[in-house]
Each structure stands twice: as structure tokens, then as C-alpha cells.
Image (cartoon, rainbow, N blue to C red; front, side, top):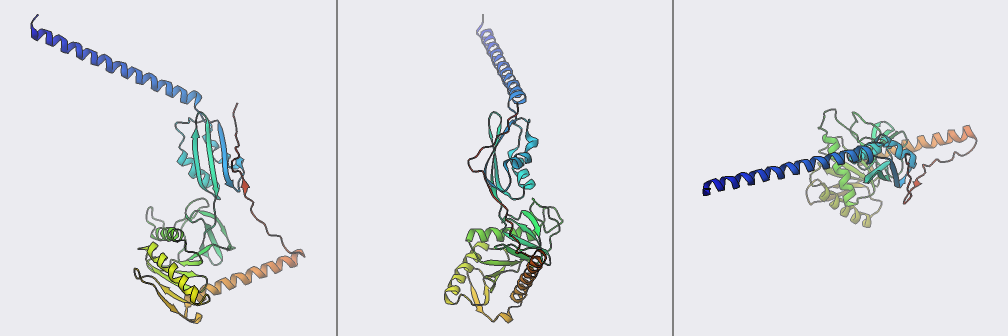
Length: 317
């Protein structure tokens, strides 16, 4: 046999060997895939739910919000979608985290959503939202500790969903400006803000402690502006904790405080007038309630169900 024929046969044998290896690998992968599919379809299905964390909702209510996932393959369940679903159906939940515990359990952890903002819908009527601008409820009562947002009307809002100031998909500069401002307030730990006016997103102003107008301007360098405002307000409070006036931080790295009589602060006078009107109306309603019932009405509070480290399971036979 010539060297050339020998080399051709060796090359052909090597080629056949590679083909057999590829074929075996393909068959192996196919078999593994079939096994995984069978396991997924027959065995790895959602059967149990465990709930931990804090919530004003019961464990059963939380589980019922994701009940549609029961019986589905653990591989195909989208936990991100389920988290959004829980927060939408149960508005007073926040930072929901759902994890898979194989073979058949979904673990749900919740935190209570807190009221942070009151978006003015009309006179004395508000959409109460979280700091992430998710609508919790609508109310004609302004809760203590929330920041009133004025100046723009909502075009659409749905309880359990983030609000919108625009009908155009993807275009909502007011919402973007408010979201950035809310984040900057949280990041700089600026407290004492009573109101945000976003009538013009390029000329935003705040009301601090019901006595100082803080001019922000646009949303550029928000963190720096609010840090500067916080420092300036702290200094002014040391000098006079009852001083009325106007603080301008619209110019980068510059804060200008102008003490002023209340009568000259038109926006502040208007805001304080609305507060007084609400307080008078609330006092009148309370007086009428006492007259009608003959006794002081009891305050109703929403209880928080403590479920930390408590596991609730629903197991299908």
C-alpha cells in the first residue's frame, strides 16, 4: 500500500470518528433535554408558597395574588412578573422579592409600602403614592408626613401602578423630573419638605417647614442642589428657626437666602392658606361627627401583620 493511500484511509477513519462523536453528543444532549422536560412537566411544578416579611395583608391574600402560577413549571415561572403582580394587586406592598426553592416552592418576601407623596388631583383630592410614585389610593384627606405635589394634573392613574402625567408612550418629562427629585430628596436625606411645585419642570420650587421657599430650577445637578440647600437651611435654622424667606439654589454650587416677610411670599401664602382651609374643614367635619354620634369618633388604624420568619405553606396533594 502506498503512503498516499494509507494517509487517505487514516484521514477517512478520523473523519468517521469525529462524526460518531458528534452524533453521540447530539443524542446525549437530546436525551438530557427530554429528561429535563419530563422532570419539568411531571415533577418540578409550583405546589407550595411561603410568605415572610411585614405586610398589612394576610399570608393568604399574598399567596392568592400569585395563585395563577400554581401548577406551572418552576423553569418557566417569571419571578419578576410575579413581583410586579403582587405590588399591583396589593398596592400597600413594596420591594416584593420572589425566589424559587426547588423542587416545588415559591418564597415570597414583602415589605409594607409607605405613603410619601400626595399628588393633587383637584382641590382637596389627592393620589397618595410611594417614594417610587406608585399610587396607593386616592383620598380627600391629606395624611401627616407626606409631601404635597402641585402644579400638574395627572392624565392617567391606576391604584397599584406608577402614575403618569402624559398620554404619550415613553414621553413623560414631568414624571421623570418628579422621580429624579424624589430620589435626590431620599439620597440627600433632606427632611422637612411640605410641598413640591412642578408647574414648570424647569422652574421647580419646594416649600420647607411651611416657611421657606426653596427654588430648585431644573433637574440638572439635583443632588448637589439639594445637598447645598440642606446645608444652607441648617445654617439658617441655627440663626433663626422661625425665619420666613426664599432660598435660591438654581445656580450651581451657590445658595442665596433672602429673608422676607410672609406677605411678600405669594406662593407660600397661597399654600399656607390651603393648609388652613383643610384644617378648618377637618375640624368642622369632626364637630359634625361628634354632634351626630354624641361621642368622639375613634380613629381607625390599618394594622400591620407581622409575618417575619413565619412560613405559610399551601401544599397540594
